[in-house]
Image (cartoon, rainbow over all chains, first blue to last red; front, side, top):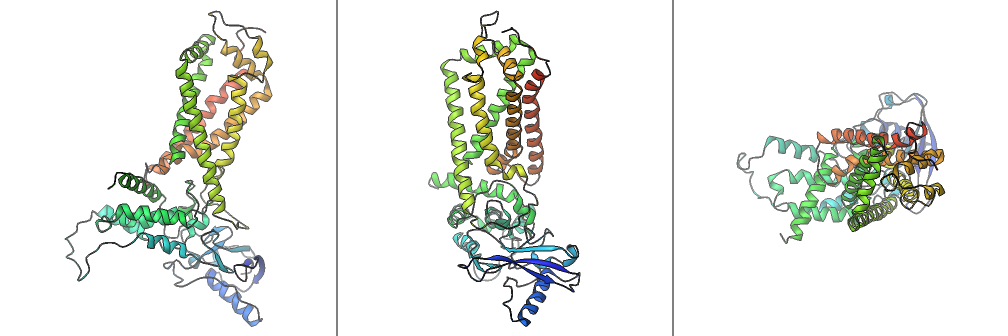
Length: 251
Length: 216
């Protein structure tokens, strides 16, 4: 297969970036998108040019490191799935593909397609510790958890923290990410002691990072590679409202 | 959340106002007495009007400040952006809202303050000595430009409400995975019912199904 790539190139945060056109030829349909970029890079290096910088790590959709906006969609057209799980057979032969970084103010660009997503780590850090008994593993039945709650906590915990939600959101809001992180612990008995404090601090941190506000367009859940449901945002809104009331009441 | 709560109040008003207006199809006596009852509320009417006005201003103030924050959250725009799920309506709430605001101002000038149509000054009281709201509405909508602007204004209001009616459940945390799609569908149906209900009046007037109760 053959493709025309328009890739965002930007030397550093201060330089002005632009889309540069590259040709990718002799691409097997079963090549992953990132492998295709690797091949383009090898050719660039051989030609003495600077390779395209992009993030990747596990390349099996579980680490959340890849962060490409492909043809205007976070992680490309194959939802749900991370950019590393996208295969070239998904595109038409000879297609033009636009590749841009995740764009949001709290994700400052480092180089080309690499952005700094530590803002998400800081939101998680703001949540603080979880009071759990250290030492040997507790007896399995000492803390009963309803199956339904365990399932929902697991669904929320599936978030790989890639930031596609904020990248795709028309308002660059990180509500889905924060919702997943808050709900994950709120569903479980282990998360109860710090429940009120956690949601208030995490939402404050999220706003402080400069993310936009949620206007319920649900674009986030459509691009999420971990299939996090936007209903968790409603859960976050509930958690936040209850926590604010409890704080007001001096609880 | 403030936007959601004020939005609910405004939706309630839009529905109430529609039910009031649809009485035009029951004849001059119904609408004129309905309008007379409203005016007879006296100070209470002004309290309701002030409440709605404050509601509207709060709704607009907070949405605009949120919209500005949202713009700032993405200083560098995408060269190419495709939306998978976000609807046009959900992405243009600020724009549709501002056009609806322009429509509301015109609507108030047209039928409440009555400064845009000189013919309204010639209207006589109805046989029971009440203001002839029925004929005012019919004469008002006989102007095709005025009617066209109403239909456009209502279309944008409908666009605004197709998103707004279900969005507030999410903002207030009053839904879950099962309920969300159902509420979205119900909200769209409600928004389009409101559109059909309101536009039926100018359409009926232009088709001469409704005739003025008095000649000028």
